[in-house]
Amino acid sequence: MKQDQVKDYYGQTLQGSSDLKTDACCTEAAPPLHIRKALGAVHDDVSARYYGCGIVIPSELDGLKVLDLGSGAGRDVFALAKLVGPNGSVTGVDMTAEQLEIARSHEQWHAEQFGYDKPNTRFLEGYLEKLEELDLEPESFDLIISNCVINLCTDKPAVFKAAHKLLKPGGELYFSDVYADRRVPQELINDPILYGECLSGALYWNDFQSMAKQAGFIDPRIAEHRPLAILHPQIQEMLNPIKFASVTARLIKLEGLDTSCEDYGQAVIYKGGAQGMERIFDLDVEHQIEAGRVFPVCRNTLKMLTDTRFAKFFDVIGKGETHFGPFPGCAAVDVFGPTASEKIPTSSASAPVGGCC
Image (tube, rainbow, N blue to C red):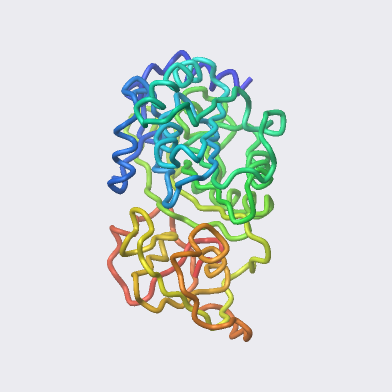
């Protein structure tokens, strides 16, 4: 059974991140200072069992109720526990008993380190494909994260549907995962090492887009992406010519989103001040909004900024009563190609798959 293979790989085979054979379950990006401080406050025994592929800690977390899908030994949970503060809470879900044992044994230590009267964390054992069986209240979470785990799930559509159900309106699923530029052959999916290394379970990028939209996340956004290097020669040969990418996506639960970017003659002005984004607000790879600048947006982007926890940071220009047709400049981002920082600047930016303008 695939789930038993994964539990054995992460509970018995891997004893630390140094045991990984590829860079798929690794993080390269340097997070903002406040996130680096939170991650630095996590106990070394927990951090040593980290297998994520991205930074899944967005901005403005104080007081939020957060759920981590596939929390492992709890590195992201404890970093988030510090950032949400004593009035927030973080729940971790994982199916691997060995990982959960490490996480639970460090709950009190982290609470004391953060100056809390009691832990604001809890850990549940269970399968992400069956979240409805766990003690999780529908529409009770402000934020759901996951770090390189959904690719390991055997029923990925069920995970996206459950996440949508568990989020409050305006809440978001902010997660990193590995994707392939084509559907992975079954013989590679059956390989326990390739699957455990977060490669052969990777979704084909177009299939992810369809699953997310069918689950209710109409306009998926790309926060970060990087192509993966398969450094192990034997694994590289087995996977060739498939390309893989690590992508951090932002899926926001909102009603009334358009299926494409539509222009209603509106713009926003970022007032500045969001934590870690004081001068430039990063919604996704195509929306870096400089404080004080009039920034035209499609209707979907406007809702993502004003019908969420970010609303207090933006002023809106235009009533949106007239439709002017498609929002100009929308195109697809190649997540398997160069990152935004590696591209040569051009006069017009393209946008992520999913309608981002």
